[in-house]
Image 1 (tube, rainbow, N blue to C red):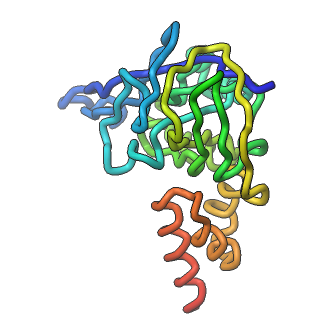
Image 2: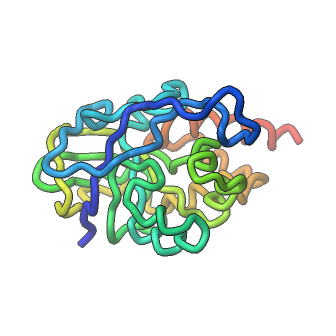
Length: 224
């Protein structure tokens, strides 16, 4: 059974200095540095208590309230990111889940953690430059896209408390054809597939920003 391996939270912080020569060391602000917490943690409609994001235009909100990453991916990143990447939360996720990957979960899935909290999968995690900057690996975003080891976002359907070690139970699956892995392939590797773009544009369980992206793509492909 899938289990919640670890919980991480963190508030935005400032990094870098103005006189830095290396672009990685210049000033930036991010909430990507998450630290594990012990004991029960409250999940509200908008995310975990004690957690925050710096870029509220592209992070947070109903569709991206909670970020998950698979514990099963961690060994694969060690040769690339080094030993520091072995600590859960390395990818800025709130919930590290053992026993599920992008091939196992679908857009619209409703899962329960423990006895109370219910979450719905809304979209794959779309990595941004801050992940690359955190690990000082220039092409890390491209590597995540290539491997499909993206993680995924949840909506919060029923708030409550979660704690590391609790099991995850799937309650409902309405879109088995649209695993997170399949949605990632459509986004990054099937850019000329109008049928896939149209299907995702009309998928009500998919986050609004992704539906709009695929709607625009489908319209562009139809005009070519």
